[in-house]
Length: 171
Image 1: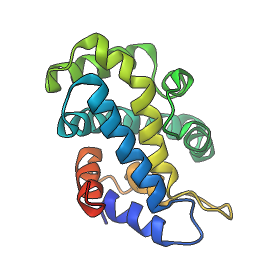
Image 2: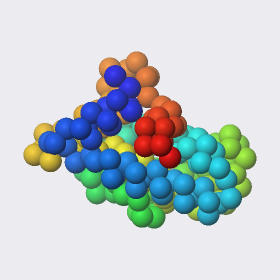
Image 3: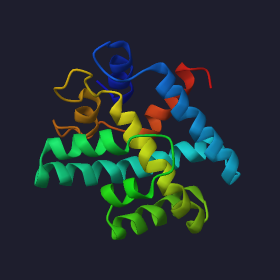
């Protein structure tokens, strides 16, 4: 099951924290960020997808070294739609921040400085999407587990998920 399906399943499940309002807020924030940077939403979704790939790698490493509980706590603490530099620093090392900024800039054509300024918005939004699968009764996060792709098949793409969510909500 793909990430979009996992998120939609979490939204439909009354025992998880996800809601259509949450997804709509994330999509609206992406659109506002697109408007603020003078780009289209497709470019911003691509940027979010690239950031999502770096976040996934970082969270996988944290999970291997510090355990699943640490990763879930990061997602729950920093998932949101408000800018949060602490979220970026908690998830990505300084070298990873530079690497992701350069890759987003190269692949989207966005100015490197603009990308670096967007990271405090993009990282919390990625974490907020992952937060949709958090159980409201404790006991794991199906969306996070899918994102981290514990079976190792590599079938996760944040940009595709954003496009499907946008179509699903008619935005």
